[in-house]
Length: 249
Length: 269
Image (cartoon, rainbow over all chains, first blue to last red; front, side):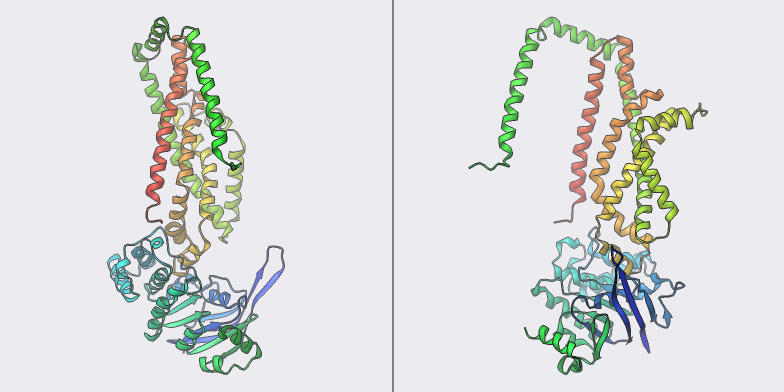
């Protein structure tokens, strides 16, 4: 049973001068519970926009997104309730700089009355231990390294007990030596059965953890398959070209 | 070769000019008998007349109380009004459908910033509250100064909110918080921290601005100085004293805001 089902998703941006930019041109796909899907593609292809449309941080122009059977693009849907269960990890972390790590993790659960402050606190400890940052619980975000920030951001998303995690290029803003620690955390998450959408340029990692890989180009899914199919035996010339450029290094 | 942007050049020349002027002034004062025993006695006599006799210093103390009372009240109103107006404008820009409120906020800010505070004060007192004669005039002044300040504070807050990375709002929303909750718990605390120095400057400006309250018959600090003038027919000492009191308070507040800034930036590299 698909947990997210996307049908014919379109997104058109209107530029300042009034011209239109069609970023997504009809995307249909689905993700099952526990599945890990990597989204790859050249920059400007619309892969991040696709991810951002899934929790309507970006408002889709048309199309249907079903989350656990509910159409979340309908006006009747309370998107705030959906987002509690579909949390996002950003390229630039966006930790709350005015709150300690602990408060970063407990703000949403406590404010939304999903947990008591004590429960949220216990959960925060548990999650920080899980991402290897138990000793940073009372630290300020600005005192953490990029890799540590992203691990806190992942823990913050996990504090909501989400059904799905959306990762928007989580390692693209990191110094190379910090990418590994974040990928380790994500690997552990993937192994624990979390449902994950991952937009990434880390092809090796995508190959290792994904159940399926989507290659998005010019606003459509131009190729889709298991990591072995897409990475080792791409069918489309555009996919071949992209992979040859990315993997040659 | 000397850097042409070097500040030492100009500052050095300025220092020399200041010294020359200072020495010239000293020479003139000396020549006019300013430092003679007679002049000193005269100064003391007038000081006694102006401030000590009949406890006239109490007029300044009461005036200062009134000034601080009005400034504090107006600041509270100003911050509250400014916060509401700025959130309306930012929320409207962010897609919350409140076009009428937004128009009102724009109108409010335009009118109150586009007319002199003095005129607003007079209108509040002599037109809007003309018939409310048993109302304490100080409350009218607080309202007038507060609503006026709100228009300026709104722009300060708006700048502060817009300086926060849009990703903060996205992060908060993507973790299930509503627009209002994200604003209240994520955006505003950061924006507030950024604008504290400017809010304090607004408070300081307000403190000085209340010196026009005398025009609607309030015995504030400035008016107290004038009242002493009227009693003693002395033209310089009372107002210079008033100026010194304002200056001391402003310098104190400026120090305070620096301390506050340090405290607020804790946890930042």
